[in-house]
Image (spheres, helix red, strand yellow):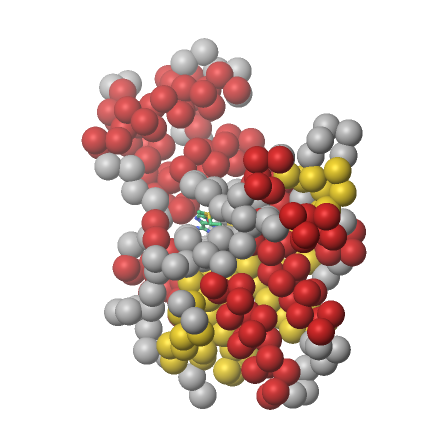
Length: 273
Ligand SMILES: C[S@@+](CC[C@H](N)C(=O)[O-])C[C@H]1O[C@@H](n2cnc3c(N)ncnc32)[C@H](O)[C@@H]1O
């Protein structure tokens, strides 16, 4: 089997699953990563990995291939202005509308969990000064099993907490373990659930949500896939619900079903009607 054909087989699988396209110019990168997977799974070479994959890609091989293609870059309070918008504008607006005993929030590409715990801390801090803040229920999902397990564990290195987590919040919401890592306290975890979910495929029964964070994941998708994902997000949002995208992402050319709102330097969206 010629190497190019073999690499195209895996590139096609990744594109069908994740919408992430490996152009031939990047096949050398794909080959390098596939060799790692072959070693991890006890295959001597790529030919042997390919033979095992041909009948169907399942289990650990599937997980490793999805991990290979995804970028999990994240940090606490990434693009901080959106967290200020959450506590100063979005949650107060939901309270003003009334009738909520809890706020349902979805973090749709939660990576290692920093986004989820930042949201929980931001809203918890607001609750300390505003007793009208309802309980927050966070549904966190990602396509990668490995990263989702990390998010659920809520254990971070010194370097990771130094990226965006203020010392005051670190002391309040994290404990130090024997390996000098920072572990999220149970009080912050309550109300957060984690589930594997691929935004390109069947979403199952989730929601409806008051707020969706879908940040820094659309950026890797074609316009067609972005449009499809946004349409699905729209369906899973309550009327007047909020959508938050990454700082470099926008709904421009993708949907007219949301109003754009601005708070400070943060831009976010509200479902029309
Ligand atoms: C760059 S991280 C963004 C993390 C976080 N939202 C943030 O902004 O810091 C992108 C995440 O999207 C996940 N991802 C990529 N494709 C996905 C898909 N089709 N469905 C669900 N998650 C996906 C990746 O596994 C990764 O953890």
